[in-house]
Amino acid sequence: MELQGRVAVITGGTRGIGRAIAEGFLADGASVVINGRSVEKGAQALKEMNGGDRVHFVQGDVKSREGCQAIIDAAIAKYGKIDIMVNNAGGATGHAPVIDLEDWAMEDSLKWNFWSTFWCTQMVLRDMVPRGWGRIINVSSLEGKHGKPGVSIYVTAKHAINGFTKSCAQEIGTTGVTINCICPGAIETDIMRDEGPAAAASMGLTYQGLLDWFASEAAIKRLNTCDEVAAVASLLASEAGAGITGSMISVDGGTAAY
Image 1 (cartoon, rainbow, N blue to C red):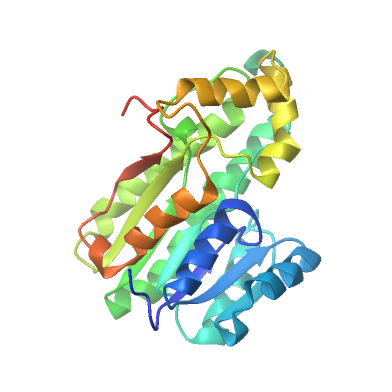
Image 2: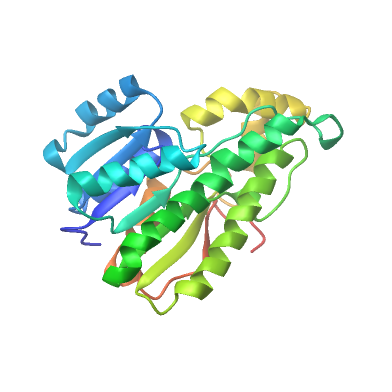
């Protein structure tokens, strides 16, 4: 899993899954750019990661093309290239049954999850393809393979990411650049704690009931962890992952049917 000399960018990298991936890449020798909307959380992450000049924070919101471009430009200005792009930022708010769903909630979810993935992927390909090497890792979800009631805004966006990844892999397969999705099951991250209660309510559950339901659906009968997702990201980012592209890799404790 050696990533010595590689440069990675992780959107939404100050907490949760993104943070675990960033720490894994740092341990594997890469220089890492983490992104987030909060300057305070970014500063805290840099202090806790203690990576010196191999860790850099870029404040920005991925819900616009301009925000994504600023992140990519800052990473290249700092380290001269981007070898690994992890499109991790995502979430959804405004959950409701489809019959009651408001347009803004669907639009926001698509910008937060799908459009940010598209924008950052397009931008880094312009750096990776001419150099003949790159790894793009899109953090999708179990909900990108199945559906659940009450959370259609999230399910829709994650399905879009999976389809986009498959198509992109076909286009760039001979360039030395791979693109894959990791599809985690339920993990109790900060975003889950923030948005989970509303999602649970839209499904007629309590928040704890939602967590228990996710655990009961898994073969391992527990939630997954951020570190388990980070381990797969390290494989996909490495030379050993060169033959894996266009894949939707589940890290969900055996929940997904495929």
